[in-house]
Image (cartoon, helix red, strand yellow):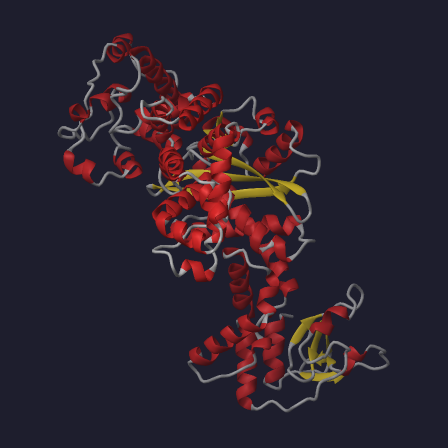
Length: 612
């Protein structure tokens, strides 16, 4: 018997209630057995004699402790004063029973969307807010207590697990039917729960759909034995196995931070380093090796902290940014805000007997360091991306930063030392992967490859050609044995004269209605119109070429789904650490995994529609 149907029949008078006899628990002073129209006891159901709420109950498996949470009982188990229910209250109770599941799922979305603790639904401020909504939005003028509607944290956690399992099953179907062959990127993020001193591994899938980049968290687990290659590999493949990935890993590229454990786990797979981590490491190493830079950095941070005083802030033309987060973008914002307020800060420090603060920082050196950091800030901002492709920018910024490291005639000794140290670390640790170069070629506005040498262009063409051949075999099995290009066509590609100017491929765009016999050569010859360039959307452009360049279009979407950095995924985990784990030191790691998964799932539902 369904609890909703039983509750309705009790309120309508079709079912009656009867007290249990010879029972010691005070719970039974409030709860009753339910009798049907024939006076027979309905098994495994009980009801509250006051509010008529129905519960599932099996005395062979369950005790009465779960019933103590019922609103009609106080924490000692004594009965609250009962009142008769007017018809309007009965009608309200029928409505709340029928909509309880909808409210419970809404609470799950509230918890997972914003990564909030489940106990938040029991807090006074949240209840007051919901009470206001209920009163204003009651279209039928039906009022009922919010306590009758809101579930407790235990119910929410149970529903989180059920909804996460259902969403995972749907995602597995979607992956195997749509994404396995299409490919994309997978990011691995490692982070530490500072409250339990435990290390976590999280895996995020990135793919192209509907002319945009989509991301879905696949799983998050605790690495109980640390970041060893064997441990990372075991947990990673267990997560991927859940979604049926293992047979299709050749179609995905992993993006990770530079770490020995992760590198060892992925040594047989395609892997690239997170560009943001490399850039931050370059800055960390170059500044930490220079005492003058470290002193300047600390002095600027001390000034920023001093300027956070409310009285002082009101005297400055603009706010001084505080270094409240790790990362060089935050440090640069602090430097710039100090430079903007330099004269005012100097005056305030002298008046407040804090002259040491301003004397520890040379304005000229601060200006030099600020200008030195700006290209890195621009690179980090552009590479972060999220919903649009950024992989092709890695090589472009590689060239720009390499040039930036060259000392200038007006550089101070400190700045020259910084550039020399940064260049040495950068050239030793930064490697441009073939997938970075292919992504440049697959950008229609960069396909001339003028930033590469002739032999590098030929290598890129060969990589693309081989990739297109593989895609043909996977998507068009009947053409698998056919040679995609004749030797003459290959020769044409190698001898193709690339223009050194951008204007050569900004002419009229040629659109054909049939598949090109040699997609690679056809793509190289394709002209791009000025109208297209003005509002250029990379994924949308390739989606428009799926009939003319079908296999190259599939390759482009696979490549451009690979993120250049892992920052967008890491932001979710930092929020989880701050808003969820911080509230509960004994947070269940399985439940945290489900919450992070649903957080990603609900975000994807707002931006892209698919069966998962």
